[in-house]
Image 1: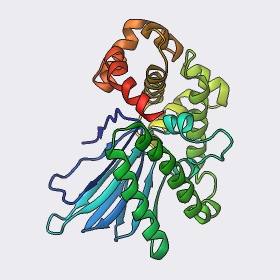
Image 2: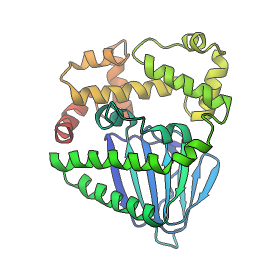
Image 3: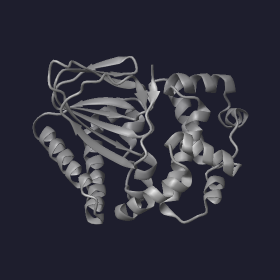
Image 4: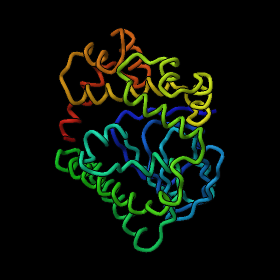
Length: 285
């Protein structure tokens, strides 16, 4: 059974040396960088199986179903880094930089086989990120964000050939889904209807709904809800706006609906989330 993992922090990093529980297929809205140090693992992304070797780096946009199938007879060692793409764009990536999330968006899910100097650099970077993440003072967190920015630049460099070799969209379905996502990203604060998307893209609303679910595993309105919730998190962390105003700003018509939806997706009320994370944000920024 597939599950959707909720990640409340803007970014997380962790390393594991064993893996005794088989995690089910899951999705999440954070982008994921997965580095395989050693063990015996088949990594399943949707219906594709990747037999991993030490030095393999997986880049995943999160919304494709994925899981690791681990052989428990060998020690399993991997590092995973998750980050919120909206947070990255607003608080880490400089406005003048090229889109550093392009490998995740265009390649969607890719395995890079790192060897030699590239492998050494990625391992050293992940180790330093993990060390900085563990220290909760403002300077360490600022250095973490600077190192994460540099890591994404390195990943873009490593992905230049795959990006050139891959067509912008391997199928018309993916092209149409990307058009829907772009539309939602522009208009999430407004009233969204299938009829409105149909008029914007000049495609049947039934085709759009079916194709979006087929490609992403989620409905259009599930994605829209997550987009609004993530934006609300950023506003709650970064401002002192009244909770009601935050709900209206990100597209909710009724404060009670905003509060219920926010708690359903995060496990916290907007007030609790702000109280818990705003101090954390002050350390990050």
